[in-house]
Length: 228
Length: 180
Image 1 (cartoon, helix red, strand yellow):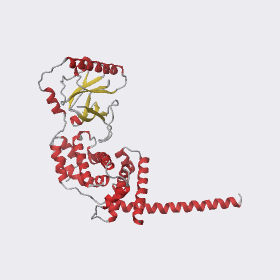
Image 2: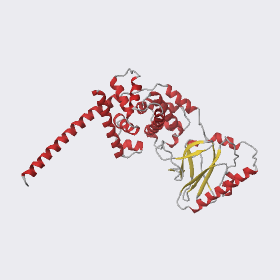
Image 3: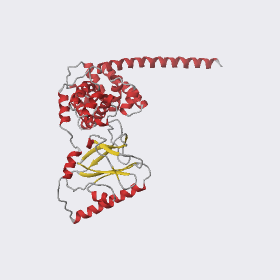
Image 4: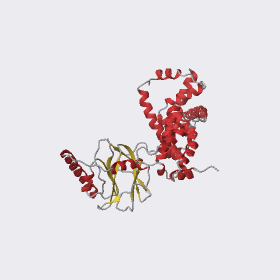
Protein backbone atom coordinates (compact mmCIF):
# COMPACT_ATOMS: atom_id res chain seq x y z
CA UNK A 1 0.00 0.00 0.00
CA UNK A 2 1.37 3.47 -0.90
CA UNK A 3 1.94 6.10 1.76
CA UNK A 4 -0.63 8.30 0.05
CA UNK A 5 -3.20 5.59 0.38
CA UNK A 6 -2.37 5.23 4.06
CA UNK A 7 -2.72 8.99 4.53
CA UNK A 8 -6.01 9.00 2.68
CA UNK A 9 -7.28 6.10 4.78
CA UNK A 10 -6.12 7.81 7.98
CA UNK A 11 -7.78 11.11 7.07
CA UNK A 12 -10.98 9.36 6.13
CA UNK A 13 -10.89 7.57 9.45
CA UNK A 14 -10.46 10.83 11.33
CA UNK A 15 -13.24 12.43 9.39
CA UNK A 16 -15.56 9.52 10.13
CA UNK A 17 -14.64 9.66 13.81
CA UNK A 18 -15.33 13.39 13.93
CA UNK A 19 -18.65 12.88 12.19
CA UNK A 20 -19.56 10.07 14.57
CA UNK A 21 -18.57 12.23 17.54
CA UNK A 22 -20.65 15.13 16.19
CA UNK A 23 -23.60 12.79 15.65
CA UNK A 24 -23.21 11.47 19.16
CA UNK A 25 -23.11 14.98 20.62
CA UNK A 26 -26.14 15.99 18.54
CA UNK A 27 -27.88 12.76 19.56
CA UNK A 28 -27.21 13.30 23.24
CA UNK A 29 -28.24 16.93 22.99
CA UNK A 30 -31.45 15.99 21.21
CA UNK A 31 -32.20 13.33 23.81
CA UNK A 32 -31.77 15.91 26.55
CA UNK A 33 -34.08 18.39 24.84
CA UNK A 34 -36.66 15.69 24.19
CA UNK A 35 -36.47 14.43 27.76
CA UNK A 36 -37.04 17.97 29.04
CA UNK A 37 -40.07 18.31 26.79
CA UNK A 38 -41.43 14.88 27.75
CA UNK A 39 -41.00 15.59 31.48
CA UNK A 40 -43.06 18.73 31.08
CA UNK A 41 -45.75 16.87 29.17
CA UNK A 42 -45.91 13.98 31.63
CA UNK A 43 -47.38 16.20 34.33
CA UNK A 44 -50.82 14.84 35.22
CA UNK A 45 -53.88 16.54 33.79
CA UNK A 46 -57.18 16.09 35.55
CA UNK A 47 -60.74 16.47 34.35
CA UNK A 48 -63.39 17.02 36.98
CA UNK A 49 -66.11 14.55 37.81
CA UNK A 50 -68.71 16.35 35.70
CA UNK A 51 -67.31 14.33 32.80
CA UNK A 52 -68.32 11.14 34.64
CA UNK A 53 -71.81 12.52 35.09
CA UNK A 54 -72.12 13.39 31.43
CA UNK A 55 -70.89 9.93 30.39
CA UNK A 56 -73.23 8.16 32.78
CA UNK A 57 -76.10 10.39 31.67
CA UNK A 58 -75.59 9.23 28.10
CA UNK A 59 -75.09 5.63 29.19
CA UNK A 60 -78.30 5.59 31.22
CA UNK A 61 -80.22 7.29 28.42
CA UNK A 62 -80.01 3.94 26.65
CA UNK A 63 -79.49 3.00 23.10
CA UNK A 64 -79.71 5.90 20.71
CA UNK A 65 -80.59 3.84 17.65
CA UNK A 66 -81.12 0.31 18.81
CA UNK A 67 -82.93 -2.36 16.92
CA UNK A 68 -85.65 -2.66 19.56
CA UNK A 69 -87.31 0.63 18.64
CA UNK A 70 -87.10 -0.22 14.97
CA UNK A 71 -88.72 -3.62 15.56
CA UNK A 72 -91.52 -1.84 17.42
CA UNK A 73 -92.05 0.37 14.41
CA UNK A 74 -91.96 -2.62 12.08
CA UNK A 75 -94.41 -4.75 14.01
CA UNK A 76 -97.01 -2.00 14.42
CA UNK A 77 -100.15 -2.99 12.46
CA UNK A 78 -100.58 -0.87 9.37
CA UNK A 79 -102.14 -1.00 5.97
CA UNK A 80 -99.72 -1.31 3.12
CA UNK A 81 -100.85 0.36 -0.06
CA UNK A 82 -99.05 -0.31 -3.26
CA UNK A 83 -99.61 2.12 -6.11
CA UNK A 84 -99.00 1.04 -9.70
CA UNK A 85 -95.72 2.90 -9.56
CA UNK A 86 -94.89 1.24 -6.24
CA UNK A 87 -95.66 -2.11 -7.82
CA UNK A 88 -93.09 -1.43 -10.50
CA UNK A 89 -90.56 -0.46 -7.82
CA UNK A 90 -91.21 -3.71 -5.94
CA UNK A 91 -90.81 -5.68 -9.14
CA UNK A 92 -87.43 -3.98 -9.63
CA UNK A 93 -86.57 -5.04 -6.10
CA UNK A 94 -87.41 -8.65 -6.94
CA UNK A 95 -85.09 -8.51 -9.92
CA UNK A 96 -82.28 -7.00 -7.86
CA UNK A 97 -82.43 -9.62 -5.13
CA UNK A 98 -82.84 -12.44 -7.63
CA UNK A 99 -79.57 -11.25 -9.16
CA UNK A 100 -77.95 -11.31 -5.74
CA UNK A 101 -79.29 -14.83 -5.21
CA UNK A 102 -77.64 -15.89 -8.47
CA UNK A 103 -74.31 -14.52 -7.25
CA UNK A 104 -74.65 -16.37 -3.98
CA UNK A 105 -75.30 -19.68 -5.69
CA UNK A 106 -72.18 -19.25 -7.81
CA UNK A 107 -69.86 -18.57 -4.89
CA UNK A 108 -67.66 -21.29 -3.55
CA UNK A 109 -65.67 -19.71 -0.79
CA UNK A 110 -67.21 -18.80 2.52
CA UNK A 111 -67.83 -15.13 2.99
CA UNK A 112 -70.46 -12.53 3.68
CA UNK A 113 -71.90 -11.32 0.45
CA UNK A 114 -74.25 -8.46 0.49
CA UNK A 115 -76.33 -6.14 2.55
CA UNK A 116 -79.45 -4.92 0.88
CA UNK A 117 -80.73 -1.69 2.32
CA UNK A 118 -83.98 -1.02 0.57
CA UNK A 119 -87.72 -1.60 0.87
CA UNK A 120 -87.43 -4.68 -1.28
CA UNK A 121 -88.40 -7.42 1.14
CA UNK A 122 -90.78 -9.03 -1.40
CA UNK A 123 -87.79 -9.48 -3.68
CA UNK A 124 -85.93 -11.32 -0.97
CA UNK A 125 -88.93 -13.59 -0.45
CA UNK A 126 -88.98 -14.37 -4.14
CA UNK A 127 -85.32 -15.33 -3.92
CA UNK A 128 -86.11 -17.85 -1.20
CA UNK A 129 -84.58 -15.81 1.60
CA UNK A 130 -86.39 -15.28 4.91
CA UNK A 131 -87.58 -11.74 5.18
CA UNK A 132 -89.68 -9.54 7.40
CA UNK A 133 -92.57 -7.78 5.76
CA UNK A 134 -92.08 -4.05 5.79
CA UNK A 135 -93.73 -0.99 4.45
CA UNK A 136 -91.85 1.97 3.12
CA UNK A 137 -92.13 5.29 4.87
CA UNK A 138 -89.90 8.20 3.95
CA UNK A 139 -88.46 8.66 7.45
CA UNK A 140 -89.05 5.25 9.00
CA UNK A 141 -86.62 2.35 9.44
CA UNK A 142 -85.42 0.59 6.33
CA UNK A 143 -85.38 -3.14 5.81
CA UNK A 144 -81.79 -4.29 5.69
CA UNK A 145 -80.87 -7.82 4.76
CA UNK A 146 -77.65 -9.39 5.95
CA UNK A 147 -76.59 -12.45 3.98
CA UNK A 148 -73.63 -14.71 4.58
CA UNK A 149 -72.45 -17.78 2.70
CA UNK A 150 -70.99 -20.09 5.32
CA UNK A 151 -71.61 -23.76 4.43
CA UNK A 152 -69.55 -25.12 7.32
CA UNK A 153 -71.01 -22.86 10.00
CA UNK A 154 -73.14 -24.23 12.83
CA UNK A 155 -74.41 -20.78 13.74
CA UNK A 156 -74.06 -17.28 12.38
CA UNK A 157 -74.96 -13.98 14.00
CA UNK A 158 -74.54 -10.36 13.11
CA UNK A 159 -73.33 -7.89 15.72
CA UNK A 160 -73.07 -4.16 15.39
CA UNK A 161 -73.96 -0.73 16.68
CA UNK A 162 -77.61 -1.62 16.22
CA UNK A 163 -77.64 -4.50 18.76
CA UNK A 164 -74.92 -3.41 21.18
CA UNK A 165 -72.56 -6.02 19.68
CA UNK A 166 -74.47 -8.84 21.31
CA UNK A 167 -73.53 -12.15 19.64
CA UNK A 168 -76.66 -13.77 21.06
CA UNK A 169 -78.99 -10.97 19.96
CA UNK A 170 -79.36 -11.37 16.21
CA UNK A 171 -78.81 -14.89 14.85
CA UNK A 172 -79.04 -15.40 11.09
CA UNK A 173 -81.31 -18.18 9.83
CA UNK A 174 -80.11 -20.95 7.56
CA UNK A 175 -82.00 -20.61 4.27
CA UNK A 176 -83.09 -23.19 1.76
CA UNK A 177 -80.11 -22.27 -0.39
CA UNK A 178 -77.11 -24.36 0.52
CA UNK A 179 -74.85 -22.67 3.04
CA UNK A 180 -76.64 -19.34 2.89
CA UNK A 181 -77.55 -17.61 6.13
CA UNK A 182 -79.69 -14.51 6.23
CA UNK A 183 -81.63 -12.14 8.40
CA UNK A 184 -83.59 -9.03 7.66
CA UNK A 185 -83.56 -6.21 10.19
CA UNK A 186 -85.35 -2.91 10.37
CA UNK A 187 -82.73 -0.20 10.86
CA UNK A 188 -83.25 3.51 11.19
CA UNK A 189 -81.34 5.65 8.69
CA UNK A 190 -77.78 6.17 9.85
CA UNK A 191 -74.29 4.77 9.73
CA UNK A 192 -73.57 1.46 11.43
CA UNK A 193 -70.51 -0.66 12.07
CA UNK A 194 -71.09 -4.40 12.06
CA UNK A 195 -69.43 -7.75 11.69
CA UNK A 196 -70.46 -11.40 11.54
CA UNK A 197 -69.87 -13.94 14.31
CA UNK A 198 -69.51 -17.54 13.17
CA UNK A 199 -70.10 -20.37 15.63
CA UNK A 200 -70.18 -17.88 18.49
CA UNK A 201 -66.45 -17.24 18.43
CA UNK A 202 -65.08 -16.18 15.07
CA UNK A 203 -65.62 -12.51 14.24
CA UNK A 204 -65.43 -11.76 10.56
CA UNK A 205 -66.01 -8.47 8.72
CA UNK A 206 -67.86 -8.39 5.45
CA UNK A 207 -65.20 -8.47 2.70
CA UNK A 208 -67.74 -7.17 0.21
CA UNK A 209 -68.57 -4.09 2.28
CA UNK A 210 -66.36 -1.12 3.04
CA UNK A 211 -64.32 -1.26 6.24
CA UNK A 212 -64.80 1.33 8.93
CA UNK A 213 -61.79 3.64 8.90
CA UNK A 214 -61.72 4.15 12.63
CA UNK A 215 -61.38 0.46 13.58
CA UNK A 216 -62.22 1.52 17.12
CA UNK A 217 -62.63 -1.80 18.76
CA UNK A 218 -59.42 -3.52 17.87
CA UNK A 219 -60.61 -5.44 14.86
CA UNK A 220 -61.75 -4.44 11.39
CA UNK A 221 -65.49 -3.87 11.13
CA UNK A 222 -67.67 -3.35 8.11
CA UNK A 223 -69.66 -0.22 7.66
CA UNK A 224 -73.21 0.16 6.42
CA UNK A 225 -75.01 3.39 5.68
CA UNK A 226 -78.78 3.21 5.66
CA UNK A 227 -79.99 6.13 3.61
CA UNK A 228 -83.06 8.16 4.53
CA UNK B 1 -60.03 -4.34 47.68
CA UNK B 2 -60.32 -2.63 44.32
CA UNK B 3 -62.40 -4.52 41.80
CA UNK B 4 -60.55 -5.50 38.65
CA UNK B 5 -61.54 -4.23 35.23
CA UNK B 6 -62.68 -7.72 34.24
CA UNK B 7 -65.06 -7.93 37.22
CA UNK B 8 -66.48 -4.49 36.53
CA UNK B 9 -66.98 -5.24 32.82
CA UNK B 10 -68.77 -8.47 33.77
CA UNK B 11 -71.03 -6.57 36.13
CA UNK B 12 -71.89 -3.98 33.50
CA UNK B 13 -72.70 -6.69 30.97
CA UNK B 14 -74.79 -8.38 33.62
CA UNK B 15 -76.97 -5.28 33.86
CA UNK B 16 -75.25 -3.28 36.59
CA UNK B 17 -74.89 0.02 34.72
CA UNK B 18 -73.51 1.80 37.79
CA UNK B 19 -70.42 -0.40 37.68
CA UNK B 20 -69.47 1.48 34.54
CA UNK B 21 -69.12 4.69 36.59
CA UNK B 22 -66.23 3.03 38.45
CA UNK B 23 -64.47 2.33 35.16
CA UNK B 24 -65.04 5.91 34.03
CA UNK B 25 -63.60 7.27 37.29
CA UNK B 26 -60.65 4.91 37.02
CA UNK B 27 -59.62 5.95 33.52
CA UNK B 28 -60.78 9.56 33.32
CA UNK B 29 -57.57 11.20 34.54
CA UNK B 30 -55.32 8.46 33.29
CA UNK B 31 -56.25 9.28 29.70
CA UNK B 32 -57.00 13.00 30.01
CA UNK B 33 -53.35 13.88 29.45
CA UNK B 34 -53.07 12.14 26.10
CA UNK B 35 -56.29 13.69 24.80
CA UNK B 36 -55.32 17.21 25.88
CA UNK B 37 -51.86 17.03 24.33
CA UNK B 38 -53.15 15.38 21.20
CA UNK B 39 -55.94 17.89 20.59
CA UNK B 40 -54.29 20.96 22.13
CA UNK B 41 -57.18 22.10 24.30
CA UNK B 42 -59.29 20.80 27.18
CA UNK B 43 -62.69 21.28 25.56
CA UNK B 44 -62.00 19.08 22.55
CA UNK B 45 -60.14 16.60 24.77
CA UNK B 46 -63.07 16.27 27.20
CA UNK B 47 -65.43 15.74 24.29
CA UNK B 48 -63.19 13.06 22.77
CA UNK B 49 -62.79 11.27 26.09
CA UNK B 50 -66.52 11.40 26.80
CA UNK B 51 -67.22 10.06 23.34
CA UNK B 52 -64.69 7.26 23.86
CA UNK B 53 -66.32 6.21 27.13
CA UNK B 54 -69.81 6.16 25.62
CA UNK B 55 -68.70 4.25 22.52
CA UNK B 56 -66.84 1.76 24.70
CA UNK B 57 -69.95 1.20 26.78
CA UNK B 58 -72.11 0.59 23.73
CA UNK B 59 -69.60 -1.85 22.30
CA UNK B 60 -68.62 -3.47 25.58
CA UNK B 61 -69.65 -6.93 24.42
CA UNK B 62 -67.01 -6.78 21.72
CA UNK B 63 -64.25 -6.27 24.31
CA UNK B 64 -62.88 -9.80 24.23
CA UNK B 65 -60.11 -9.42 26.78
CA UNK B 66 -61.94 -7.88 29.70
CA UNK B 67 -58.85 -7.78 31.88
CA UNK B 68 -57.40 -5.33 29.36
CA UNK B 69 -60.39 -3.04 29.18
CA UNK B 70 -58.05 -0.07 29.74
CA UNK B 71 -55.96 -0.78 26.64
CA UNK B 72 -59.09 -1.36 24.60
CA UNK B 73 -60.55 1.94 25.80
CA UNK B 74 -57.28 3.72 25.02
CA UNK B 75 -57.41 2.44 21.46
CA UNK B 76 -60.90 3.89 21.12
CA UNK B 77 -59.67 7.20 22.54
CA UNK B 78 -56.72 7.33 20.12
CA UNK B 79 -59.19 6.90 17.26
CA UNK B 80 -61.57 9.51 18.67
CA UNK B 81 -58.67 11.96 18.89
CA UNK B 82 -57.78 11.25 15.27
CA UNK B 83 -61.36 11.94 14.21
CA UNK B 84 -61.56 15.08 16.34
CA UNK B 85 -58.19 16.20 14.98
CA UNK B 86 -59.37 15.86 11.40
CA UNK B 87 -62.49 17.87 12.25
CA UNK B 88 -60.42 20.51 14.00
CA UNK B 89 -57.95 20.55 11.10
CA UNK B 90 -60.72 21.30 8.66
CA UNK B 91 -62.07 24.05 10.93
CA UNK B 92 -58.63 25.60 11.34
CA UNK B 93 -57.85 25.57 7.67
CA UNK B 94 -60.85 27.78 7.15
CA UNK B 95 -59.59 30.22 9.79
CA UNK B 96 -55.84 30.75 10.22
CA UNK B 97 -53.17 28.61 8.76
CA UNK B 98 -50.08 30.53 7.82
CA UNK B 99 -47.40 30.55 10.46
CA UNK B 100 -47.38 34.30 11.03
CA UNK B 101 -51.08 34.38 11.73
CA UNK B 102 -50.74 31.25 13.83
CA UNK B 103 -48.07 32.81 16.05
CA UNK B 104 -49.94 36.07 16.35
CA UNK B 105 -53.07 34.23 17.42
CA UNK B 106 -51.20 32.22 20.03
CA UNK B 107 -49.45 35.23 21.52
CA UNK B 108 -52.80 36.83 22.14
CA UNK B 109 -53.45 34.28 24.91
CA UNK B 110 -51.21 35.23 27.83
CA UNK B 111 -50.91 31.93 29.62
CA UNK B 112 -50.38 31.57 33.30
CA UNK B 113 -48.14 28.68 32.47
CA UNK B 114 -44.46 29.22 32.02
CA UNK B 115 -43.33 30.54 28.66
CA UNK B 116 -41.39 27.31 28.15
CA UNK B 117 -44.47 25.16 28.62
CA UNK B 118 -46.38 27.40 26.26
CA UNK B 119 -43.66 27.01 23.64
CA UNK B 120 -43.74 23.24 24.02
CA UNK B 121 -47.49 23.21 23.57
CA UNK B 122 -47.19 25.36 20.48
CA UNK B 123 -44.42 23.22 19.00
CA UNK B 124 -46.42 20.06 19.69
CA UNK B 125 -49.41 21.57 17.96
CA UNK B 126 -47.32 22.27 14.88
CA UNK B 127 -46.31 18.64 14.42
CA UNK B 128 -48.38 16.69 11.95
CA UNK B 129 -51.03 14.59 13.78
CA UNK B 130 -49.36 11.23 13.05
CA UNK B 131 -46.03 12.49 14.33
CA UNK B 132 -47.61 14.07 17.40
CA UNK B 133 -49.47 10.86 18.21
CA UNK B 134 -46.32 8.74 17.87
CA UNK B 135 -44.25 11.14 19.95
CA UNK B 136 -46.83 11.30 22.76
CA UNK B 137 -47.27 7.53 22.87
CA UNK B 138 -43.51 6.96 22.97
CA UNK B 139 -42.20 9.70 25.22
CA UNK B 140 -45.16 10.80 27.31
CA UNK B 141 -47.22 7.63 27.68
CA UNK B 142 -43.96 5.67 27.56
CA UNK B 143 -45.22 2.75 25.50
CA UNK B 144 -42.92 0.34 23.71
CA UNK B 145 -42.92 0.29 19.92
CA UNK B 146 -44.66 -3.10 20.05
CA UNK B 147 -47.44 -1.66 22.21
CA UNK B 148 -47.72 1.38 19.95
CA UNK B 149 -47.97 -0.82 16.89
CA UNK B 150 -50.69 -2.94 18.44
CA UNK B 151 -52.57 0.16 19.51
CA UNK B 152 -52.37 2.12 16.27
CA UNK B 153 -52.16 -0.62 13.66
CA UNK B 154 -49.06 1.10 12.22
CA UNK B 155 -45.84 -0.87 11.61
CA UNK B 156 -42.94 -0.51 14.02
CA UNK B 157 -40.48 0.92 11.50
CA UNK B 158 -42.99 3.56 10.39
CA UNK B 159 -43.59 4.48 14.04
CA UNK B 160 -39.85 4.78 14.68
CA UNK B 161 -39.56 7.07 11.70
CA UNK B 162 -42.44 9.24 12.92
CA UNK B 163 -40.94 9.51 16.39
CA UNK B 164 -37.50 10.36 15.02
CA UNK B 165 -38.87 13.05 12.74
CA UNK B 166 -41.02 14.50 15.49
CA UNK B 167 -38.07 14.66 17.89
CA UNK B 168 -35.93 16.42 15.30
CA UNK B 169 -38.72 18.85 14.48
CA UNK B 170 -39.44 19.63 18.13
CA UNK B 171 -35.78 20.23 18.85
CA UNK B 172 -35.51 22.49 15.82
CA UNK B 173 -38.59 24.53 16.73
CA UNK B 174 -37.67 24.93 20.36
CA UNK B 175 -34.10 25.87 19.56
CA UNK B 176 -35.42 28.54 17.21
CA UNK B 177 -37.46 29.93 20.07
CA UNK B 178 -34.51 29.90 22.47
CA UNK B 179 -32.16 31.59 20.04
CA UNK B 180 -34.72 34.21 18.96
